[in-house]
Length: 380
Image (cartoon, rainbow, N blue to C red; front, side, top):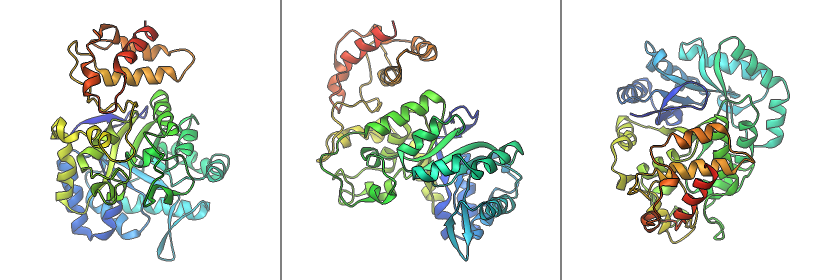
């Protein structure tokens, strides 16, 4: 298992995480088997947005005795009322639900205190300007949460959070299908049966979001990495072609600022299938060829940092140079930290010999040689 820094939190999280939602369908013994298998394979982060009491208790029992080995992403604002889940901003309900999570998890703190499910601007503004955020700050000051996070499906909200200076990490829905869509306050638009055929490539607002998160040190953990499984079948995929779990995972993990993908597991075999990503060959991870050859919505001309351009004869990490170039172009003046990162590379864009072999391999027809020249000039 490989581990990544989650923004500036100081936490090292496994690339594959445990998304707890599916565990609601299972009993205590079955949940423990899944959690134990995750731990055996090096998974160290779990997300629990669910408020249902039994699943919380089952997870708590599964991690008992090994709490310190887990980074828990627990949600603030997910409540259980009259036998059902309710997203709430009523502070008495919110407090009760959070304390219930601590009790059932048999812990006195949550590593990542997630402001739960914020997709509307009015909701975000009310949270960040009122008693809700004050409560979250109190939790952090008391050590009941270690870091403040926020969950959203809306890139416009994620951007506000990333620029707030207070939200340290974001749980965001990332997959190649959702990435084509513009910001919306309605999550149902992400699961539409058909997308507008004029769509093509990653929506500019999402491109900007990933770069802002990388720039500001706001880490991203991923939900909906498989788009609810719709990407696994050609007939349900908006691209008209099927993708594999490994390809979906690789797509998410090649986005700037992404640290971990939360995957839902029904059984230990599902854990094995996801963790197989860590030993998959490059050809198995290759989402780029699939998207480039799809009958709909090819990402023509857009670098997705997929690494398909490699190998370079002078060993330039072309994907990294492109990422640093895009980050630098966002700002009027290139930050010293980006320059330092660029010049620390074993080979830079200035070493490009213009052979254009990378362009022949690029599935999206990116003008790589031109971008190397642009980077060499910008970082000179």
